[in-house]
Length: 194
Image (cartoon, rainbow, N blue to C red; front, side, top):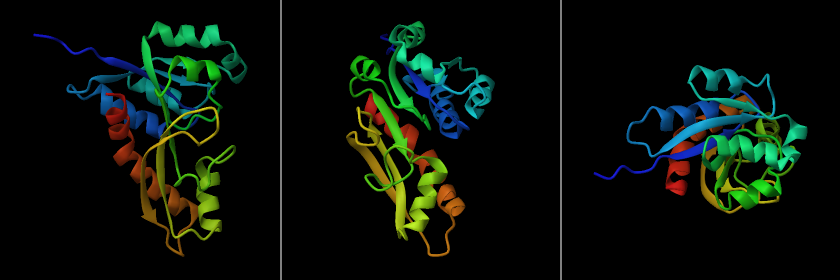
């Protein structure tokens, strides 16, 4: 009987880590999964994702912002865990060219709006939800896309939307977006990588 090879992925995260935790639970606790989150990479040692990943038994590599310029250092960390793809889950640094070359069409990001609306440098988390409300948008959603050398402009893999009501606050929008992320992100990652 042939055993299918497990694909090891790294999740890059800078913040609280709710999407990273969702990915880890989806892939690492499902015996049918052929993907495993083998490593979490963060640029912030105090990020909530560190505790979440540790609690779920996933190793964490803290790579400070200035160390991301050192391709040998970063690639050594990824090679140590046989990483074949990268998923960004609230990672706030620009992905360096050497990673784009090492993992062509194998770096996936999630953005909390319907790109191209409310994308680009500085547009993440609460900044996006506030912009959606202040713009008077009647809908918003999530965009899952491949990463390229320009913020939030890679090929779109999946989008889905929810209505924004006139009474919605940025916190209301955030809650709706989290529900979409939880429902769709792991599935789209699996469909893209396998």
